[in-house]
Image: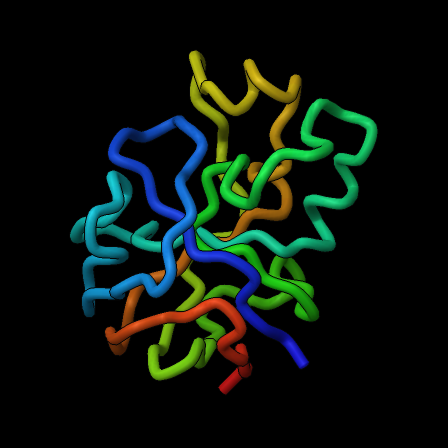
Length: 143
C-alpha cells in the first residue's frame, strides 16, 4: 500500500521544510502556509522515500523528511514513473501530476546542505484538484 510518510511546509522557497500533521490542502492553491503554494502548476511537491534512500551516504543520513523541500514524503509508490496528468487520491484530497523533475536554482539551501538534490530527477509536482486535510499514514491511490 502506498502511503503518506510526512507532510512538510516552509515559509521560504529553497529551504528544507518543517513537518506538520495534518496538512491542509487548498483547491487550486497548495498547502496552507507553504511558500510554494499559489495559482501555478507546482502547487504541491512529492518525493518518495525510495528516491531519498538513493541518497544514502550523502549528508542526508539522519535528516528528517522535508530535507529536499518536498511537501509530501511518500512510501510504496514510484512517483517519477507516473505520467503527467495522473491523478492521485491522497486521503480525502485529489492531486494531478503536472510536472516530473525540475531545474534546481542557484543558491538552493538543500544543494548546499547535501551536495546534490534528487528533486530534479525524481521529484513530482502536482496541482490540487480537491482540497482537504492530509494526515501521515493516509493511503495514496492512483485514480
